[in-house]
Each structure stands twice: as structure tokens, then as C-alpha cells.
Length: 332
Ligand SMILES: Nc1ncnc2c1ncn2[C@@H]1O[C@H](COP(=O)(O)OP(=O)(O)OP(=O)(O)O)[C@@H](O)[C@H]1O
Ligand SMILES: [Mg+2]
Image (cartoon, rainbow, N blue to C red; front, side, top):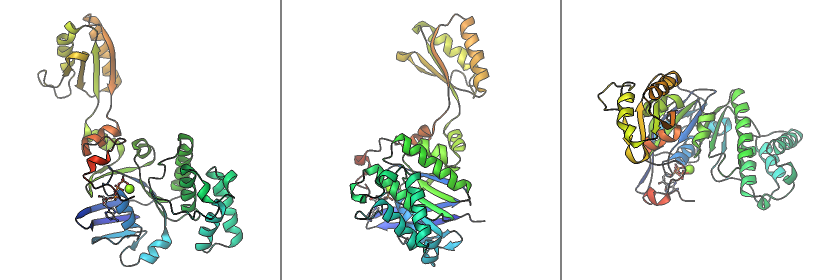
């Protein structure tokens, strides 16, 4: 059964840039999908196609049970969107912007006013509510754009980099707002550059690169794919490296002859893939001690979402360098 958001083979080209090269997505009702990917991967283009702002060259999309290509107007009535590039009217105040959105959705003036006041409070904009939006800082604008997307609570929401440019406190608060929204039954597709955010909010994560979904699953599933737990040991004396390697090899997951222990001579660091977690760690520490191998450091390391991202896309998430994007940077 298709979920609240379903996309199949979405293709979109701009001149000779193939921004989407067959995107498939499924977001079950009431869940959050985090869309990750390096700059220029096609995240915003995917969101724009799903929210009727852009017509794909081919493919199919169903949002809130409605065919996006056949009935864009009906789709628009069932969705909320907050964009990477805010759609705020500069000359209106924050309050006026929000009231106007309410009126666009045919709320009564009084209800629109009340909703605007609630949101201004919730997004820490009450003090600036009656100033024109053009006097707002970047973070304030972003919050106003998000508030505008939440004036009515539509069954399906899209947020393109909702917390880019927000300080940690405002980011945390937005996460709370998002969790409330989702616990009320809203389905959400969110793009983000912050892997921690996807880890925290998303039930499922899809990694996009070069216009395709290259991996999808829960954060745990993706981490497991990238490689399981490892024990890392730093021995105090260089002479102990060989002994430690032999010992660790016995705990190695794959049980190959010294094949699985990685040794970095100059840092005296040994790494071995394991299963068994903390219990195994305690045992290794005892064994090292029994053999008189002194250590500077030991730890159990699990792959992070950063490791997943790096191994899938070959990019580090935060430092996606425009020059690496082969001139495919988004037009901003
Ligand atoms: N209107 C447009 N005209 C021409 N090319 C475009 C247009 N919109 C997007 N592109 C190209 O399509 C590709 C995908 O862009 P998109 O904005 O979807 O990436 P993104 O994943 O959102 O990146 P970012 O992380 O930088 O926001 C890029 O190569 C971009 O240059
Ligand atoms: Mg984008």
C-alpha cells in the first residue's frame, strides 16, 4: 500500500543537468522521512516536484492519496511546505505574514489572529511580531517561514532544511514542535544537512546522490550496513603492538588469521570488528592486563550516521565543498 508520500521514477532535467535520475520514495502515514545528500544531490528538486512547484519530466507521485501530476490543486490543499529559501513577504510584519496565510486558507479573521499569536509565541518571535520582516535576522526569518507552514496543520508536511541557520536553542525548540506535529498524525518529509537531526527525528532515512536514492532504512539499519561495532585499543608501548594484535585477533568477528585487526603503527592504535559490545570490552581489558600490556585508551566504537554518509557518498556531510559539486551547485 502506498504511504502518505509515494514517488516512483521521478526524473527532472535542467538543460544537460539531470537533477533527478529516477527517485523512488515511500513515506508511511504518520512517519518522518529524513532526506540526506550532499549539495546538489537533488533534495530540493525532489521536494519541489512533490509539492507541485515543479513538473517532473517523467515518473509518478502520489501525496496524501492524490496524484500530484493530475491534481496539483488538490495536493496543494493537503500539504504544508517550508522552503530552503523562505517565502516571507518582507514588507509585512511577522504577525501580518502569519495572518495572511491563515486567510489564504480561509480561516476566519479572529481564528487567524489567534493562530498567528500562538505561533509567534512558540517560535520566539513575539517581541518582533510587529516589525516588518525585512528587519529580521536570518534565523528569525527562517522561524517565521516555519511558523507560516504551520498555520494550518496539513496531513502532509515538507520541510527543506528547516533548521539551517538556527542557533542550538531554536533548533531544539523546532524539534519539539516537529515531534508534537508528528505525534498528532502528520506525515513529514524533511531534508537536512545535520545528520544528528535526521538521527533524532526521522523514522526512516533516504540518502540521495546524483538524483537517485542510494540507500534507505532506519538509522540503525544504515549504520549496520556501514559496518558494525569495533574495539579500538591504543597501547602504551610500541613493542606491545604485535602481542595486542594477536590477542585482539581472537575476538575478531570474522575469525580470520590476523586478517581483521587494523594496526596504525605511529599512533599505536589497533582496531578490530567485533560483536558482543560492552561485555567483550571488559574481557579484553582483563586479558590485556593479565599479559602486562599497558594501554593508553580503549573503546567500543559504533558507526555514526556521519560514517554512513561518508561511506555512501564519499563526502563528509558538513564540509560539502561547492568546488566538489562539478559546477552543479544549486542556483541560489
Ligand atoms: N532551476 C534550476 N535550473 C538549473 N539547474 C537547477 C535548477 N534547480 C536545480 N538545479 C540543479 O539540479 C541539481 C540538484 O539541485 P537541488 O537544488 O535539488 O540540490 P540539493 O540536494 O537541494 O542541494 P543543496 O544541499 O545545495 O540544497 C543541481 O545540480 C542544481 O544545480
Ligand atoms: Mg536544497
